[in-house]
Amino acid sequence: MLTWLIVLPVLVAVLGAVRLLRRRRTRHAFRWLLATNIALLGGALVVVATALAGPAQASAQAAASGGVNGSALIGAAIAVAGASIGAAIAVAYTGAAALAALSERPEMFGRAMVIVGLAEGIAVYGLVVAILLIGKA
Image 1 (spheres, rainbow, N blue to C red):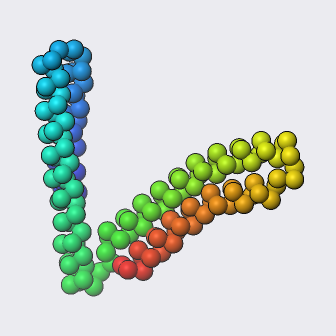
Image 2 (tube, rainbow, N blue to C red; image 1 turned 60 degrees about the vertical axis):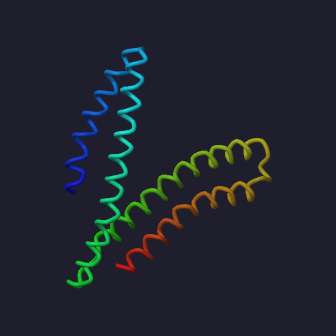
Image 3 (cartoon, rainbow, N blue to C red; image 1 turned 120 degrees about the vertical axis):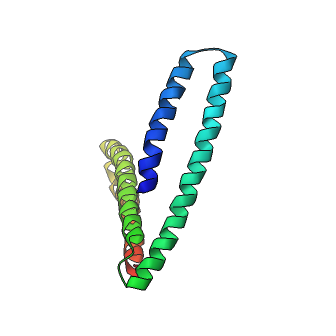
């Protein structure tokens, strides 16, 4: 959490600087923009490194105390949310296409429902991953 409290103001400042630099159309502005992007990349690598080191320390502390690993619960929530959003997008497109196909050829109902069902299966995969992660915690 401390990492985000440090990174968020820096990110806002950098994005503001980039926005100001984009207004200038000179070669000097391009160099500053390139330097800013390199600095952002370095900062992102530091954030990723601290984020990857954090769960290892947290899991060691949770194992010592016998508590539930919060990282696994957050991962489970992300898995369910991501899979649900992906399934919603997939069902929206396949459902619309299935209705269009059914309006022209009603005998395509079985095939259309299989394709929509496969799109809904994405959410089930996210749920399975979440159950596995919670089981590990």
